[in-house]
Image (cartoon, rainbow, N blue to C red; front, side, top):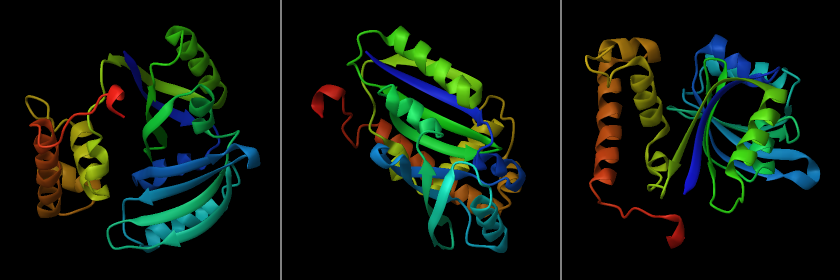
Length: 229
């Protein structure tokens, strides 16, 4: 069995606290831990075009003086803005996962919090001991808001990578606001207002995201288990 955990936390003194003020979702699709140099090389995707609002956020990140060593490059775009940075490995939350042999499959930052999905491959002798150590080390760096754990026999195809940043942002927001609840907690107008976007734009990206997820679920792409890698 494979252990999967989903965590939301407040990282003490980290630049990610700025996302509370700016109400911007930031994905972290790529990172490379370079432990020998004590740094993480990371790409953060701000899910908004390169506006004055985003420029202000990036300047505040540059001057935050916490775990960011250096902002290397900013790649502007119409739908999102990529920012490449060096981060302090030892101060990062990612170092806790890496040191305990967890694989981070998803991470994002919004509402002043950091969100992670991490996988413990079936190679550890004591899952309970590893989880206990992980929780203890996380508490030294962060206030853990929620931690959910599940055990699965195999991992589904990673469909998150198939969604565009905007599709991920829209469907995540819809889910968190209760759009998929019964009865629905919000409608498309509410989601559009939350994202400061038009109803038509939200509807378009939400439909595309749902279509991709259903296509994957219906077996258009083969599900992979650990034994097949």
